[in-house]
Length: 373
Ligand SMILES: Cc1cc2nc3c(=O)[nH]c(=O)nc-3n(C[C@H](O)[C@H](O)[C@H](O)COP(=O)(O)OP(=O)(O)OC[C@H]3O[C@@H](n4cnc5c(N)ncnc54)[C@H](O)[C@@H]3O)c2cc1C
Image (tube, rainbow, N blue to C red):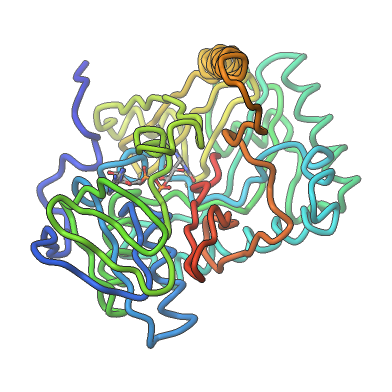
């Protein structure tokens, strides 16, 4: 087994990587975006669509595809993330949850339309969540019942028998599965690079090897150079945000891993029978998937991630407690700020944009990143 490369997807020689350069002078734009992953690039694209007169530049510390956008499982998915009843308690309520789900469903097709199915190796199978024990079967049936109470009909989510599930992918011991059409399997790096080319064609400047050292409303410092953002700064550094000065506790980074198989032989492929291009996941807190014919699968152990999350949250809470005790004045911790009522949505595929710090008519935005499958 080989490990430690940037990613399997990034290690190919035939990628159509657009030409980019490091920032070598001071720059002035309307909107400066920090981070050249999917969140940063989709934001750039959406801004140019909303207002073609805007000047927009993206600053990427490494190269395109360095972050999770170049290392993921390639599910282009509208699979709802989170528990609807819990989400409905936030602002937006039930109607908000339904609306975001509808937008997600539309957006996966929009992504393919904008980038071109052939450029990103998009296959529209759907997603399938398989059960392999009585408790897993119970879990998917409960999920289905709950979804029906939210108006999710047979066309969007249906229960497959063991035989129907096996007809789509031959998985040992399967007892049943949920299937939804709302998923494409794509080549994640081809998708990112196609997006970068699209964004460049729209007039956006993408600077790579251009680490932003300081982020302030209206101003970035990139090495020896200064960037003035006349209107907005967008922070799209996702899991790396905690490394940024002043941002250390704004976001809790998680680690997850992918396994990629050798290319399967025709016989192996035949045996597995992964014919419909579904993204496949288990119902046991473990994710598995297929990306492209004959080649890849990945696994992701969710249980260690949950333990890690719990440990991290407890550590942060303890740190916050002791920090609070050491101070003579107490202020409400700003580590995980409550969503502001003045939040504004941006037309990105990655969801909502949180407004972080409005000053001097200039705003700093932070993107939560794409939803996880
Ligand atoms: C193993 C794995 C599998 C996944 N599978 C899926 C999937 O199948 N489907 C799905 O929808 N999602 C999946 N995800 C999640 C998805 O990949 C991420 O949510 C998404 O790529 C985040 O995009 P981003 O642009 O917000 O962050 P990133 O892609 O991480 O981009 C952030 C960028 O910011 C740059 N940066 C950081 N600091 C600075 C700085 N100071 N100055 C300039 N640039 C900086 C980084 O170099 C990086 O390129 C997966 C994630 C992982 C890790």
